[in-house]
Amino acid sequence: GESVGLHLPTLSVQEGDNSIINCAYSNSASDYFIWYKQESGKGPQFIIDIRSNMDKRQGQRVTVLLNKTVKHLSLQIAATQPGDSAVYFCAESRPVHGSSNTGKLIFGQGTTLQVKP
Amino acid sequence: DAGVTQSPTHLIKTRGQHVTLRCSPISGHKSVSWYQQVLGQGPQFIFQYYEKEERGRGNFPDRFSARQFPNYSSELNVNALLLGDSALYLCASSRTGGSLGSPLHFGNGTRLTVT
Image (cartoon, rainbow over all chains, first blue to last red; front, side, top):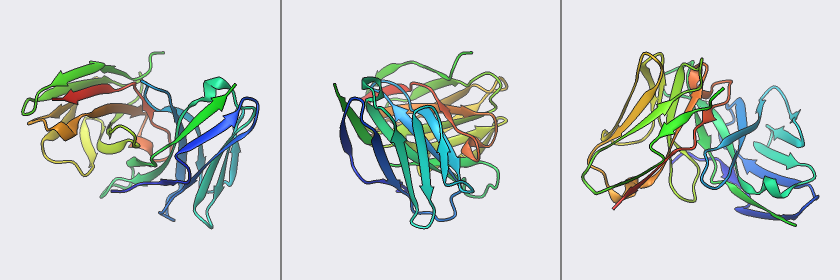
């Protein structure tokens, strides 16, 4: 089926270090991307989004970088904390077939971030 | 404000049975989407509803159906359950357009186990 690719299934970092989670997408026409965090037993939680007319967007301790040339997306987490341990998904928004104003998200398989104290 | 709420949180069914899952969107959100998340994978799109009309459907069999009510809440129905339907079913809401230009906000899902 449709999917967005992620480079690493698991990333282990030391508390206080910076984390970088990568994602590759396939549809060069996609113009909206979202990062989600999913903790065990919970639904995906919105972290940050970016539109294709930008190449960088910053939030609180998080930065998303978009490289449209190579169709690559990354999420950077500064000063990683134990509470950041979760599965991180990048998602690509695509129009629903036959509709110009409704969309669906195509998710990658996720990267598990483990933060070592 | 309350987020997206789903019920029940857990459900165990037998093969061949049917199931109804319920979702209440965030207040003011008119679009509801349903996703299926199999263990170890990312969510897969099932349906999107906006203003009580189906606006999109993913690659799922006709055993899956849904509807949206005048108060924008939604139900997902699955008939003739198969073992492979065991998954976390996620509901998400957005103000308009179901993720085109605005993020989806997810509930915590219903964990369905088919035995």
